[in-house]
Amino acid sequence: MEALVELGAEIIQCRECPRLVAWREQVATEKRAAFRDQEYWGRPITGFGDPTARIVVLGLAPAAHGANRTGRMFTGDRSGDWLFRAMHRAGLANQAESVSADDGLELTDAWVTSAVKCAPPENKPTPAERDACAGFLRRELAALSSMRVVICLGTFGFDAALRHFGVRPKPKFGHGVEVPVDGGPLLLGCYHVSQQNTFTGRLTEPMLDAVFTRARALATTDGGGGHGGIEGSRQ
Ligand code: SF4
Image 1 (cartoon, rainbow, N blue to C red):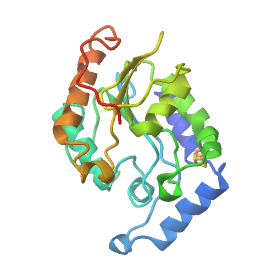
Image 2: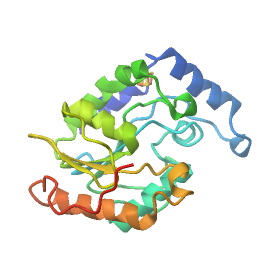
Image 3: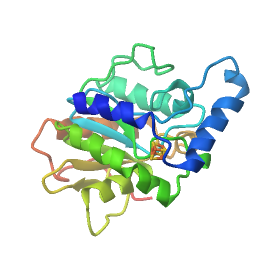
């Protein structure tokens, strides 16, 4: 717990990536018209949730007008609406809404974070920015000592987890794909909860629920290692 608090305090001070620092601050100054009266956070975003979590949700990076505005991962945007509704249905969140950092949301047995801690232009961090932030992710995952399952959102989250855990050869990403890590957690692929997927029907609520149901089952067994998983698709 202490390590995560200390890490969080360090992360929010970080100015390592000039392009991302400029972007997060520019967005926070210019704002979206609908949020013009709000004070944007405009800084890096730490992971949050239950420090004893067995289930970790790993996303790409904060959204410019979501977490970069509210100061909490997946909070204040459509992706978060989908994610926390599903986590609430799965019994991992005390409420389905995630609108502001002080909205009362609490996670149980779950931790939500991202591979890159600052909002990138077009949601695309460069490889150098990704690598610059990898040390924070490494320390965060190391501090989550109860972690059993990592739900990897999209190819970016999946690749970040593979890189972090040194998985080779690299398995192909897919929704429902399970990758056991020797001496580590099981990685569970999940289409990202972005509007690009949810608006088009590529990711449906039942598909998302199936991932959380599977994650809960894996977290309470001895790892599972890819046995009897949900129906996976590779796209
Ligand atoms: S992306 Fe990570 S390393 Fe880069 S400025 Fe943000 S917190 Fe620092």
